Image 1 (tube, rainbow, N blue to C red):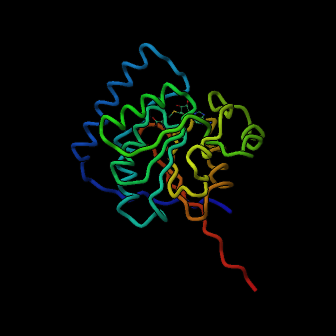
Image 2 (image 1 turned 45 degrees about the vertical axis):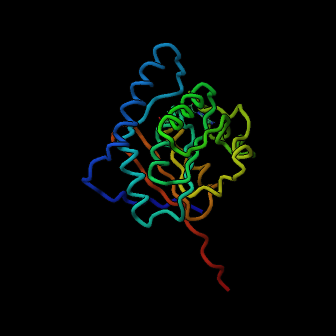
Image 3 (image 1 turned 30 degrees about the horizontal axis):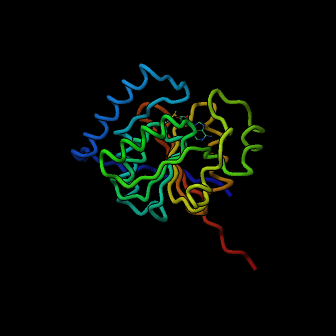
Length: 207
Ligand SMILES: C[S@@+](CC[C@H](N)C(=O)[O-])C[C@H]1O[C@@H](n2cnc3c(N)ncnc32)[C@H](O)[C@@H]1O
């Protein structure tokens, strides 16, 4: 199986007011949070850019469905934006404090988004993660989040991740190994750089 790169449909359309407001409030909360509680693995992403990519996914027939999962959801901003775009959205984050902030953000905007504390690395995937190298921040030392969600990774239609540079390869490998055929991986690589890849659907068996 392999991942196929997809191009991201371009749109000049601005962000709706509710998304802009949520991003502004979240960024202010993140600034305050980082003064008193430093979680070095958490680096906020480009939320306006993430909204644009998710909107393109919602409006174009690129993904097979609308079940969305953010791997390492941090403050929960991208998952909340996905919920605003009517994805069935959940976020998995290993740091309990960040999950608390994510739930508060979703509640404040009356968004239906589920956040669980745990690891996005599925059961059985840990050895693959460590065989691929060592990481500055990525860890697998937590509960298995999918069990709490009552879902498997191959139920997810869209997975979003903002991996640290040394996690980029293993992020693609985990998705390739455990996501369902036709699912889409959106990765953020800093600045305005987003990448969209789809796991190939199984080709029919030849006789
Ligand atoms: C670079 S931050 C990105 C946060 C968020 N996605 C965003 O765009 O703002 C990576 C996040 O992944 C979390 N993380 C690292 N390893 C994890 C794992 N195995 N399972 C769940 N979260 C993890 C970190 O705690 C951190 O919050």
